[in-house]
Image 1 (cartoon, protein in one colour):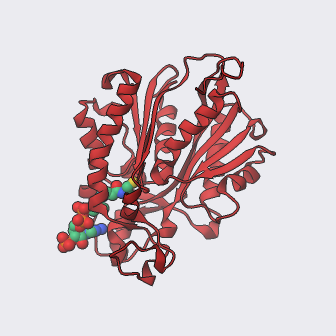
Image 2 (cartoon, helix red, strand yellow):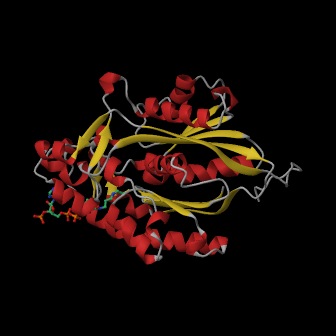
Amino acid sequence: MSNGTSSGRRPVGVRIAGTGSALPARSLTNTDLERLMETSDEWIVQRTGIRSRRIIDRSKGESTSQLAGEALKAALADAHLSPTDLDLVIVATMTAEMSCPASASLVVNHIGAGQCGAFDLTAACSGFVYGLNIAHDLIRGGAYRTVGLVGADTLSNLMDYSNAGRSTAIIFGDAAGAVVLKATDDTSKGVIAQAMHSDGPGWKEIYVPRCVQDFPEGVAPDESKYEHVQMNGASVFKFAVGTFPKLIEETLAKANVKPSDVDMYVCHQSNQRILTAARERFGLAEDKLYINIDRYGNTVAASVPLCFDELKKSGRIREGAKVMFVAFGGGLTWGSSLWQL
Ligand code: COA
């Protein structure tokens, strides 16, 4: 058990000491998309709840690691800490600029975090929530005291903004969100219950092919699809609608708490209909399950920390609250992290 006692260390709690986020300057509205492909604002809003999203402009220096660095800087400022206080930086992303170095290394360089540990974690939209569990347990176990965790993605680079890609391109936006996790003597603070799951055979529901061999059996390889997200929207929708409530139920049962005991559900913003269905399933009040997908679309690993930062900044989540983070996505993967703040 990683509670810090097995090695004779004092037990530690974990607190979320600061939050931050970063968004590209450029907006891509549904009206903009109407000019690029055969679609309509009405169709997009009705099926997804999305009205606008932000996308990076590489020529202006915006990128996954640049957004990640800005978000982490903001979280450090919020925590009244400096970059050199960090022992470790983890970036959850599926859109690192390069396969080497990791985005986390570029972030360490960008913010001047010295020689702390740095690595990326790839679990698509579930990446940040997986990261919360991992970073938490590393601190709880006593090995690290201050960890910067970022969720950052720029899927605009992997979109086909033509008719051929219209069922996918309308969904995704670019962003980064970050938290700084810190050891505390208050052992009541930290993760109460967590879950991390995957469905290997489901990999073919969302993938980004790079060569002929990457296409699943039964799908004709097509060069025009290289480096573009291929998503079976209807299957993913079905998976999400079924998995989401089960994941919340599993996490509540592990923690032995009722749905209404949780002060806020911070959920991956995949589709407004999926979020609303989950809210209704548990009879949650509207203000207990936050939704900002209308403004930013699905920002993959960034969506959960972006919501969390907005909720913290607006005072809707305070110290002492119980907060459940929930996400699902490519892999297929899904995960939760229930916190006592
Ligand atoms: N504008 C207008 N029409 C569109 C369109 C668009 N952007 N994209 C697809 N269509 C059309 C299709 O061509 C199809 O037309 P047809 O019936 O004449 O063949 C019709 O709309 C229905 O297409 P379909 O793909 O079945 O739509 P849908 O109702 O499943 O909605 C999604 C598509 C992507 C919005 C929906 O499946 C979804 O939200 N899935 C979950 C995606 C998700 O959450 N992904 C992230 C996981 S982390």
